[in-house]
Image (cartoon, rainbow, N blue to C red; front, side, top):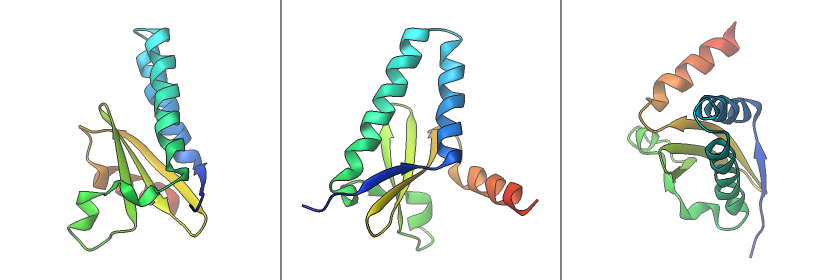
Length: 110
């Protein structure tokens, strides 16, 4: 079975950090638990990363290279490369993924 290396992008690490900081305001223990569980779920991608669903917002417009893990109320969006998995975004499922990507593209242009 092919093994992939799971790599977190800086923006995904920042997403997770902000989520954990917010949760930590109410409970340090819950924040730690969520952090480790999200990391654990994403690290499972080292085998069979195709088993997770294609991001529906992208699939509607014909983009199928981005997949996601749904963990509790968060979406962990990643891209499969030849031997690597890139975790790109960690976002609350109530937020609009398209808006987040647009904001990030606008930032990278400046």
